[in-house]
Length: 172
Image (cartoon, rainbow, N blue to C red; front, top):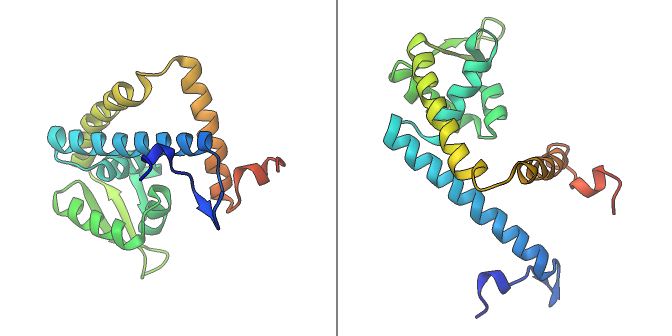
C-alpha cells in the first residue's frame, strides 16, 4: 500500500490531481486539522471553552450591540443552526450568553453576549491570539503569511460563491 503522500486522487485509473498537488492538499489538511485540534485542546485546558466557543464569543463580541440571530451566527461560524443552538444553550447556562426571542420574528432567536461573556471573551481571545501566533503564524515568514492569506482567500472566495477559485478568476 502506498503511503498517504504517495496516493493520488484517481478516477477510472487516471490521476485527477498530480503528486505535487496531492502533497499540497495533504499538507494543508494535515496542518489545518492539527491546528484546530491544538487550539481546541489548549483552549479547553486554559479556559474550559472549545475552539468553536471561542469563535462564537469572538463573533458576538465584535457584533453591533453584541447580538446576532442564531442563523447569522451559524452562517458566520459555518456550522449548522442546530449545532449553534445547542452551543448557545450550553453557553447561556454558563452565563456567557443570553437568548431571547427576536422582536422582528417571534420564531427567531437572538443571542447576546453578557458582561460575563465579554470578560471571558477578553481572556479567551488573548489566549487564542497567542496560540495562533505560536502554532500558525510563528513558523512562517511575513512573506509566507501574506502569500498563504492570499491563497486561502482565493480558495475561500470561490467556495463562498459556489464555484472553484480558478473559474472565478477566469483561469481554466
